[in-house]
Image (cartoon, rainbow, N blue to C red; front, top):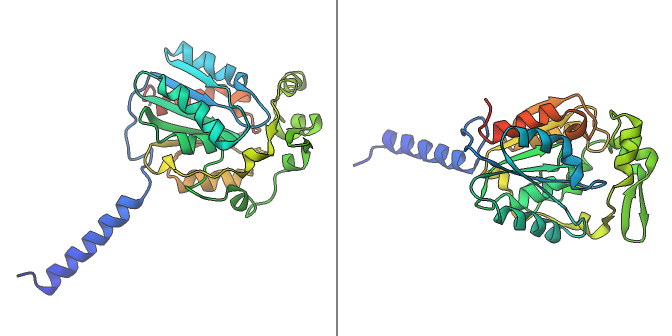
Length: 259
């Protein structure tokens, strides 16, 4: 027969086990699965070509890489575009998102082909969370004031793009990126995730310390909440272009290709 002390010990152990089981899996505590595939997703004010610098480096490392063309219409449309690419991958795949597409990584990352998640200065909501409300608990980043709308289509003004989005890039290069920015639909911003893949998949996060598009402290909060392996890059929002080596190394770690 169980005495009171034994019962109390069992109760405490059971409660501890329950708490452990609800915590997100962290990159630090889970060895990454070796993956040969990487799927990249872009965010607002960009298209799939924004990953070109990182793609070249990942391909040189022998990885199979696909950059999704995010339609920027609605969150379900955007998630579907990523899921179609994920379904074509043969084996474990690292899913990487920049900026807004952290929403897509968080939702589509539950796909069985996804072995790890990488967030690059990206949104990382919990399931059902109102990201806009979360962001409002931090100082508003300067880029927000530079969004202009033509009906339901939004884009960044050239001044805001050069100063607040691509601030650490040479002006000539930033102007090329501005020329190919894809407008987003207002409906895209109303979507909420129904899953939080970072609660069950190893996660990695690259904080941009000079970010003027997403508040760096908000990035730090989201990275810490998910238990991500986190690096800080002295970069604008476009660290994937201004610091491709650091971003590539983080993706390679997530793919189990680099210590």
